[in-house]
Amino acid sequence: MKSTGRPAGSGPAVAGRPAGAAVRRTLRTLAGLPPCRWAQARLARSGVGGRTMVIAVPYLWLLLFFLVPFVIVLKISFSETQIAMPPYQPLLEWAGERLSDLRLNVNPGNFLYLFEDSLYLLAFVNSLQVAAVSTMAALLIGYPLAYAIARADARWRGILLMLVILPFWTSFLLRVYAWIGILKNNGLLNNLLIWLGVIDRPIVMLQTDFATYLGIVYCYLPFMVMPLYANLEKMDLTLLEAAEDLGCRPLRAFASITLPLSLPGIVAGCMLVFIPAVGEYVIPALLGPADSLMIGKVLWTEFFNNRDWPVASAVAIALLLILVAPIMYFQRVQGRQAGADA
Image (cartoon, rainbow, N blue to C red; front, side, top):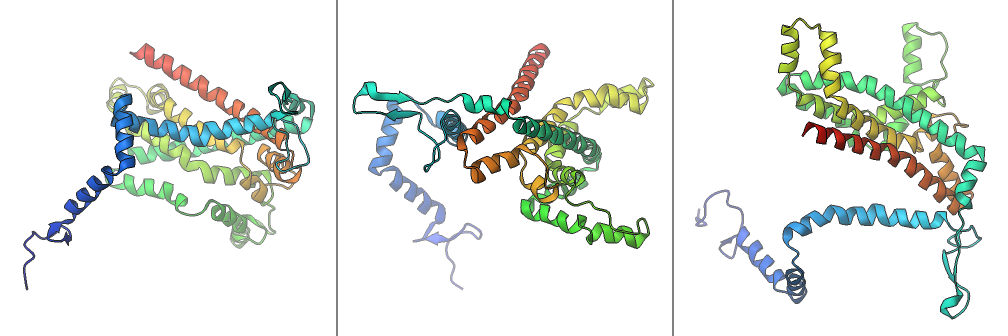
């Protein structure tokens, strides 16, 4: 067999040279093209380096996928509804050909309408209640689970964490539809309870508030477990050993040491569960009762059924403000604590 003249495992050869040389030659060719030379010259003259460009990537992402859509929705929320496509008047409208004919159409009444109609207030209150109960249930289940994973043997932690995130490998809709097959009257759970003799007739579990809470907790439980595990896993266990040496009971040591130190993980997990649960639409629509009033369902109805985009945009902006306020407060408290610790 003829030797290639290069060590084994060095990769395929291109014209007698390693593949890496071909890649570097291609990159040099691309860098020599006029558009790339022009971009490099402009960046050099402006004093923008590679590190600045890397830092700018997440800000560009936020600009394109958060700030721009937010500005568009905010603009629609101050417009008037009209029978057209899109179904709202533009904020700036030319009434003639001169600059003085520029007319500003601002309608703050969309936000006032949210407080005048009890439908929106009830939807907000009900959504906040469902999200709060689901978050507390996820915390009660997720905290012991995260604590057990953090205290497990190192060789088992990876497997246990994989089991936690395993549901993310399947579609969100498939996971919700699976609960329909489990909770319906002739479903798996009712048949199991009848077979065990616990009940003699099926229990109505589907299309109930219980099914809504169960679906939300199941779908968002990993968002609670992961930040809690990250916080508990790096905790200094010598503090608990010192408390035990001083005669502190395990329950008191947990309440005095573990729980306070895990508060950042608790808050982060609650935020990650509460925020998407407030605007949840799919789970209440598929598992909850038909008359459930959730803000996600109201948004869907206003956008696609009533085609009242200005009011729907006002609902979305109000929901965003409700969710942003506790986040900003938490960040401010965290900043003060960090400054005090420093």
